[in-house]
Length: 433
Image (tube, rainbow, N blue to C red; front, top):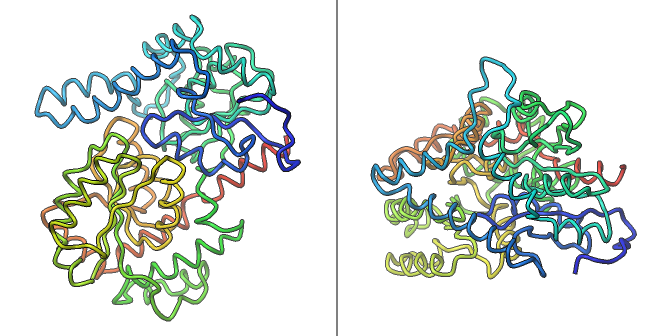
């Protein structure tokens, strides 16, 4: 399946590698699908022909991640076990600045299995047509370097800050190049010992269908309509009229969609109870068509049916809905389309943190893991998000944020401060190489 000459559209292509552990690494790879050989993204843990030994090892890793994410909700013991596992990917404080290049236990474990042959089959298959390799997870990059891949190896960072696990045992000798989303990860990689010439500040790869071209015509148009919904009293628009005019031009005269919230549930399904609470609290406003609510559940059929039943029970059909897909590509396609008329994104601070760059204010749900704690800090630093208040009072605090124009301000902050053209930047680097 991985063999074949590179003649797809007569353009330079690359192998684009992800892993289907949660949605983060696959979502990061999805905008790069047009760059991928034959338009296909390869999952390192489930590609056709993967050896049974490798597949089983990946499966145990994925199952452990999802179990621990859900297990955390159990009082005391769940938190203790979660914190133990999270310590292996813990991100140390940035200050004081010091040499953090020393390897850790989790790194030694990863390279132990790679030395025993984990991933060798994948790299040998890719070597049949050694295109530039782009991976959104660090282990395929380590595998490629260990087994002598003969073209460039790129790793796309999908968090605002990263653990030492993303960097090789001897980073000063590594040839892995990193596409980084922000200056936080750039500076962190240097502390880990990565050579500065191997760090490329591209921005996170956001979906082209939500941006348009490099002039961002789709993004600007959608943000204009969003501002109308997020600032109905025009407080922000009056105060920052020159800023809005500079970046967006004249705003539309009227909305093209109702005020819309999307609540995104991660791959492990750990935020289900919060989504239920918010649906329950907002049911009156949804029923009165003051607000539209979308619950995004990914590809999990039981979760989809669960929320459909609950929406039906509350008699909210039509103005509350469930977003899902039969497979991951269908889900991402639907998600990106619905996002164009979404005004507020409620999500844990995952890779979706970077979607604030599309001018969508984020209500941050409780984080899971050290990297999400840092994503939350980065989002707040950008001024593009707000922490979730008590879900029981969503109908109060959410509307306060709307009436004051605060969410409109966050939307503009994310749009202005966060790099949006990561996909285009990565494509240009590959095609010019």
